[in-house]
Image 1 (cartoon, rainbow, N blue to C red):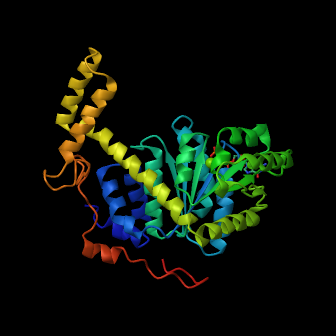
Image 2 (cartoon, helix red, strand yellow; image 1 turned 120 degrees about the horizontal axis):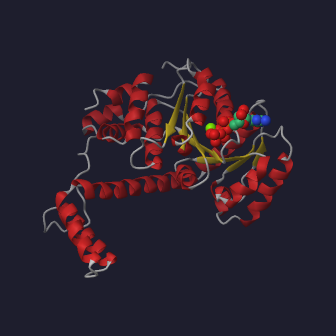
Image 3 (cartoon, helix red, strand yellow; image 1 turned 90 degrees about the vertical axis):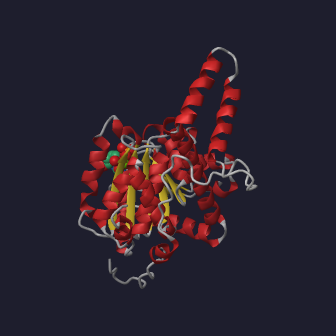
Length: 364
Ligand SMILES: Nc1nc2c(ncn2[C@@H]2O[C@H](COP(=O)(O)OP(=O)(O)OP(=O)(O)O)[C@@H](O)[C@H]2O)c(=O)[nH]1
Ligand SMILES: [Mg+2]
């Protein structure tokens, strides 16, 4: 269906990856098929979320981290999610220009993603995009989100380590704490440490940790950096690597990835159900009927919703008497058919290439 696109991505073809990312961002059936086909090849890349208020230097910091990781011969994917770009457009262009230095490097792949044109939500598109980069062979994936809100929390859910960046300016630190960013931080960064007030911001962040609810995230370290002057980046990377080691040392990484997958699967279910209202004529008809009855106060909205849910499960239930109950949804009515490769093909695709020799040159 995708003309061997999955195989080309898995073989490290940049053009194929660029094309694939566009498909999964748009949420079109070809993108879904591609994500399905490549999923068995994911799980290798370590995902780092970089989040924080607008303008604190997240992109500059990501660039500095990329430079450092490249010195260690790591292959890197960067996804810069910009919910505001639908309105401004400027920040994205800025990122592109800044990231130009990596354009000729085959082991760095940078993608800016605007909310505009993304179907089914940013979190789903981000997860799928990261999966594609993972299958492409990235060792690290940096996920940058600008702004403060639910999209940050969702993206943080998709990251193995979440770095929350603030700057000493205009009370960013306090704002970040109020916005709940402290809740998702594994590592704090006070960037623009070359400006006044960095110490104070650091103190604010440290003070807030005492009240943290989640013990796993109770004492994130605070690093001061000046991304623009390339200062403090090594220490920050060490902090990220240390967190990674802790995550990988016990069950934490597995648990976090499981909960991220849980959120992803639930999102897909909800998306699919929403879609069915538009594509399943029986459901659409019953919906209109129910709505009319709600309108005339014949039934309440909850009763109507229950009725629709029952219909949904009935429509999708396997033939009666199999004992699976109405909740088994074999192939969701309107979901694209299972498009993953057959088992035999998957065996081939699903195999990871052997890891490159330590410090050795990449063949791709
Ligand atoms: N003084 C100083 N300025 C910095 C530093 N890091 C970044 N900047 C500047 O801050 C501005 C914003 O940097 P970006 O890296 O685009 O910040 P961002 O957080 O990615 O911004 P958005 O993606 O728009 O939220 C730019 O003008 C940078 O040059 C730093 O360490 N010190
Ligand atoms: Mg940015």
